[in-house]
Image 1 (tube, rainbow, N blue to C red):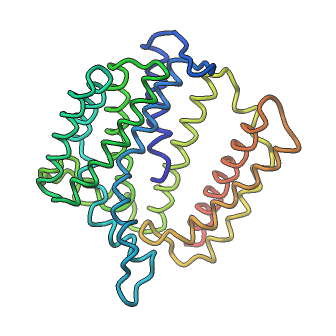
Image 2 (cartoon, rainbow, N blue to C red):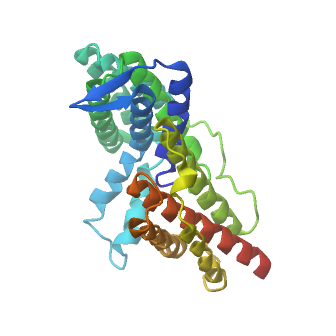
Length: 311
C-alpha cells in the first residue's frame, strides 16, 4: 500500500476514540478538533512511520552500478532494509512505549528508544541502527505534535501501537511479507497474500483494498464533522469507468509490475476537479476529493469487469 496504512489507522482509531474516548475537544494555536480526530491523525502518522526505512535506498541511488537506472537501483536497495525492523510488531510495542514515556520523562523515553536502536543493530549493523535512529527521531516529532494538541501519554502509546501494528498487515497484499518479529527470524507468512493465480487479478485486489481503506478513513473523518459524503460525490465520477478499455491495452499488469497501471489510473482522479465549478454543497475541497476518488473507484471497477470479460 501507499497511503492506505494511514487511512486505515485513522479510521480505526477515530471510531474507537469516538465511542470509548473522552468527548472533549482539543485545541492547538486556535484550531479546535475533536479528540477522536486528533487521535486518528496521530495514529495515521504513526502508521506511515515504518516506511522511513526507504531512506536507506534513497541514499544509495547516488552510486549507481553501471547499466542500471535510478528506479531499478532504488528498489533493489530498498529490498535490503525495507519491511524489516521498522515493520516489526516487537518494535511497535517497544517504540510505542518509548514515545509514551518521552511525554513524561524525556531522558527515560530516549533510553527506551536507544534500546530499540540497539535491537535493530543486532541484525542490521550500522545500517540497521541508522534506519532505526531515523525511525525514532521521526516518531518523537510525531509525539511532540500529538502532545502539543493535548493527547496524553496513554493516548500516545495507544495511537502509536495501533498505527505501527496496522502497517505490516496492510503490506501483505504487496511485495515481500514484513518481518513481523524482527530481529528474530520467525516466519509468519511465507509469501504475500495472492487469492488468485492470475497476477492481474491479484493486482486488482491489492489496488481495490487501497481504495477501500481510503474510503473508510475519509468517510469516518467526514462523519465526525457531521458531513454526508453522498452530498459531495458529483455524477461526473462515473466517467472513470471510461478507463475500462485499458484492460485490453496493458500487458498483464501485476503487483510486481504495476507502474504503468498505477501511472495511468491515478490521473483519472482529475475528474474530481469538475466539482470546483459545480459545487454541490458545503466544502468544495471535499467535493473535489470525493468525486476524484469515486472516479478512480469506477475506473478500477470498469477495468476489472473488462479484464474478466476479456479473459
